Length: 143
Image (cartoon, rainbow, N blue to C red; front, side, top):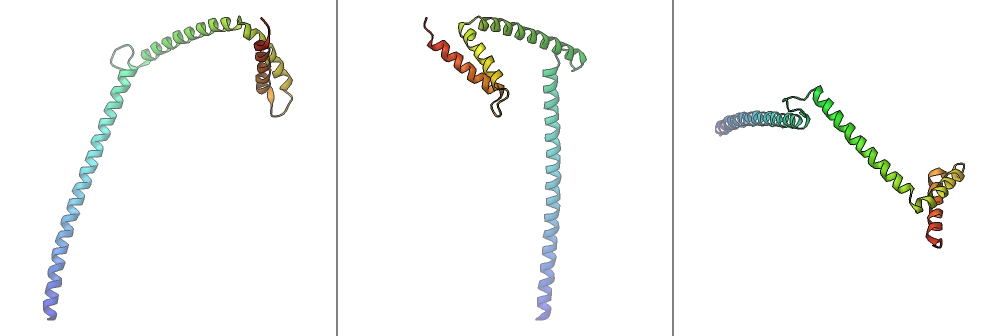
């Protein structure tokens, strides 16, 4: 009986050992497949990033991003900045001619000056309070 049990255990051990070896091989193949898939995905992402950078950065159409493209971008940025400055100046002039601003600005300046030495208030809050007072004056004055 002891021999029979020993034979069954030995046979079971051989089957388990064989299955474990098969599982190990399958796991190794799966790991290699996953590694290959990750490598391919990484290469694809790199290609997309490279192509996107070229499409966005190649401003002169020569097929590469270089110092000439940077010069073109800098010139465009100067043009846009100049345009923004011009429009801001025009808007500032129009705003300063407004009757409301003429009433509010002096009060804001006085409020800021008075609030400088006051702790936790400071010039920003003082200017806001002064501007509020100037706005109230403008709203309540008779026309």
